[in-house]
Length: 77
Image (cartoon, one colour):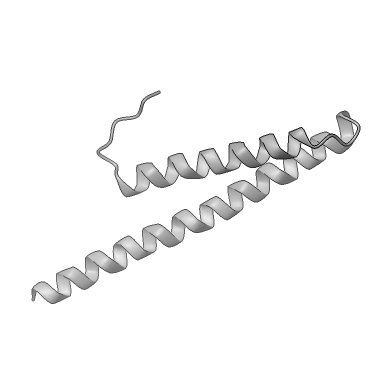
């Protein structure tokens, strides 16, 4: 019976990691897209808005994943 509980916990952890990976891809891609759009429309095709958008996407995905994997951890903000 303990084996079944271990498998359930591993499946739950695996599902959370899959969600984190998907969230990271979506948020990073969205940040790059918004940065590129901003760069093309307003800033004469500079590179830094794309890099800043990518960084914000990665940061948001990391924060969401950290909270999902450890909900008891208190937020610093």
